[in-house]
Image (cartoon, rainbow, N blue to C red):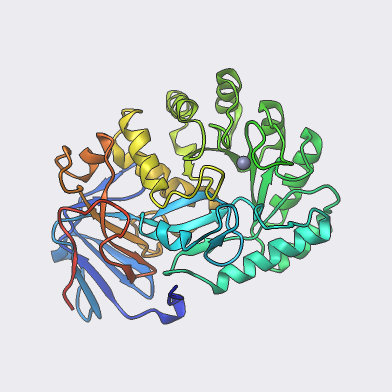
Amino acid sequence: MALAAGPEKQSGKLVVRNVGLMLSGRLDEPILDADTVVAEGGRITAVGRGKDCDAEGARVTIDARGCALAPGLIDNHVHTVFGDWTPRQNQLGWIEGCMHGGVTTMISAGEVHLPGRPRDPVGAKALAIVARKAFENFRPLGMRIIAGAVIPERGLTEADFAEMARAGVVLMGEIGLGTVTGAEEAREMVGWARAHGMTTVTHVGGPSVPGSSYIGADVVLAADSDVASHINGGPTSLDLAQIRRICEETTRAVEIIHNGNPRTGLYAMRTMRELGKEAQLTVGTDAPAGSGVQPLGMLRMVSLLSSLGEVPAERAWAWASGNVAAVRRLEAGTIATGMSADLVLMDRPQGSDGRDVLDALGKGDLAGIGMVLTEGVVRIGRSRNTPPAERIPEIVS
Ligand SMILES: [Zn+2]
């Protein structure tokens, strides 16, 4: 298992040219009139037509050979533990597998699967701090992993949140995974986390892991966390009336996950769009879980929401990249100057009925991934997990 280069190993200037189709990851302009991306020091410095971009002095030049380029997918909901291992399925290498599915950033919703997970406040706090620090030092294939999501347990105090924030913790895990399950206590803890710069999430639906709780619309809305996690259940869903109520009343993000209820996921997506709240839609997998690990889970969500939901795939891609980055305040997830150069090059999969990769996704197929970069560094070539892409980019210098 290769321990990939971190940002400190950044090379110089990167140029990606001959892009056939450029997705921005933004809903206001999901497809860009551009065929070239330039990056330096891991950040995008120019996006445009080749003739308008300064490609001089490139240390690495990639000929996309007409492939589509998109921002790396950001999985808004994973359950990392330690290393590239999940005790839930006793599986190694799942994080690397996800990069082969176009994911370049994953965000923990709590290290809840740790065998023997401590549930006392000191233990919960220590686990979050260690997970955060460990994943800053450990990036399988260059995956950015924002881990260390403190599980909301009774007894944690505002002083604990201050201490965790000083130690670098930026996330609170799902309300409902720990002992905090009531509306008032949830709201108070979300407030402490928010005051100390953390983003927060609330489990929605029936219990997931043993010991977790049913969380209905009343608690979700009262907690007012940054994300209503898996509005389509993790995996057991609320009824449609409660889902509609959350969609109508929340001013925060709503997340649809792979390991949930596909029927209510589509309902929530349609409802949010009807309400004019598409900018608040986010996507995750909620893996690893009892349902397993899906290296292509994020791609499958783009395909599912686009095809069955009858939404252009470039919009679903934005829910799974730029929208998540906006909620999590990440300088990533969109193809724009200043953003992290986390790039996926892809094409229609061989044999697909789709005329291009967007049409393939819109018809329920996956994308064929030919290359993934994080922070401007090529991490993988042809994906070992997607069906083979029609065309593959090439490193020409
Ligand atoms: Zn959950």
